Image (cartoon, rainbow, N blue to C red):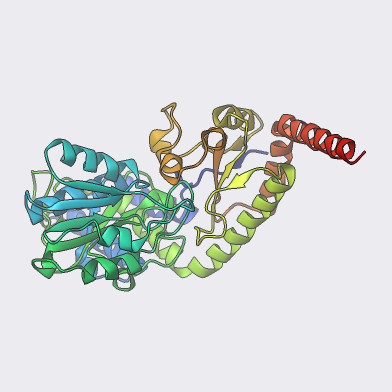
Length: 401
């Protein structure tokens, strides 16, 4: 039995999502900017999807702007937000952000912008006061992800927004707060008003929607300049031909997630905890990062000391269990995860880290199969552990004698 446990990289599209997309790829195909009947039909479908996505995050539909995915939406939020604030604006972000944000920070720093990167605690949490104290008194854009894609640790975004707003600025409108909710939306409640943010990023394929489509929510009154130039789609914020089928699928995925959010979260959390207990039973000295912190209900980031994560993942793959060693966007690199480095995880632990992420379709049989394969793959680790325990016991008895 093959078991897919890499939903934080991408989640398989729901059947209803695929079925909703097919007509817009075939018999109902039309350019949503065209004025004829097929075009008007496509535009109506786009607007329905916009309303569905907005409903998932408690937002106004007209402030949801579709993009090609989470990376583009992050770039539009960060680079567009800084362009709005002006060349003197500061960028404050965290060391555990997705590369889509951190690469923007590096780009802006190379161009001379003042950039502050805040480190997390050892548990993977960014403290709100550390963000607020980094803002200074002038224009500032703050970008803090809602939930980390590797550890699953949920960040105190609403608390951070309040802390940042309390810092005296030249003008209130010179504080913009962005959150990347790509991993959280569709898995835990996300509400733009409750969070208090100005910009929020979404992606369809993390919530069982299609790949290649995302969105940026922009608070009313904020006019982000575009990064792309061409047509007038999305009120000029994001020009380009509409991916009608993808957007329709995004809308259906968001609607399904909203309707079953509490039920799905409770189920995934139960399955996550079951897998976690099983893995720790196999290797008691393993370390689950972020354990005891508020986490996504589907995510386990576990470190097996003395093992190489790439070898573990390859052996699991051979056994039909599909996990990752970290973010899919950095899986080609040989270095320890930047998230683990920022958290101060010991290298011997970080090198043995695996990310296991469940979906709403992960069943008990799949969890049981995964543990069976893990047991085989981890047997050398368990054998060494038993030898260490035996040696320690003999040493203690020798001292007692």
